[in-house]
Image (cartoon, rainbow, N blue to C red; front, top):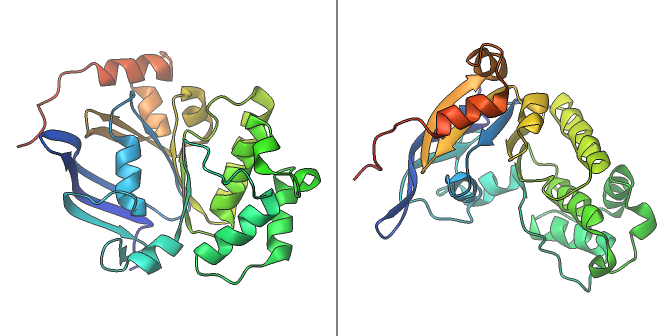
Amino acid sequence: MTPPALRCDQVVKRYGDFCAVDRVSLEVDGGEIVALLGPNGAGKTTLIGCITGLVNATGGTITVFGQDVRRDFRTARRLVGLVPQEINFDPFFTPLESLMIQMGLMGQRPDRAWCEELLDRFALSDRRDAYTRHLSGGMKRRLLVAKALVHRPKLLFLDEPTAGVDVELRKSLWDEVRRLRSEGTTVLLTTHYLEEAEELADRIAVMRRGRLLVVEPREAMLARGQGRSLEEIFVELVHSEEPPCSP
């Protein structure tokens, strides 16, 4: 059987007495878009950090296309692309240099033609030789996505990718996510824009206080509301009673 793109089994992350991720189990199939929703501090970014190797989980197991993210770290990491919340470029590199360097960091021979293609795809070709510190906020966001795609990952994490961007850029990024899914890329998206989840996701997962409350197909989630908006359904879920963090 083909392994799922992502399998999290009872994942826990603790910082002393604080439980940031509490026994989260989640499977994502290849070619699926899953929106991971939750209020600030719910544990979404910490969970993504555990999957991508930026955070050491306290317990549980995580596999990416069957590769354990701890035992097979190098193989698993090369299957994954991450667009973080924070802008994290060296201000003295150009967009083209940033992509070429990222390819090397991911264990691939730098391919200028592919990097140029990504710059063209994200409307950055005319800024290819500018210092990244001179790019607008929207351009930096587009470059983050290009950087995450430079090694052609099979699983892409988008952590608040459209935070603070204008409507036009948000819609263009939505189109890019759809195109990636059509090519077989699996996407896990965190967002506070609920219309983004409603527009893109095949399934919607909701976290609160480190717990995964529900994972449902988008249509099933919307059916919960009986005519109410996804925002109203979300607010009801995150304010529902739940047991305390596990010992």
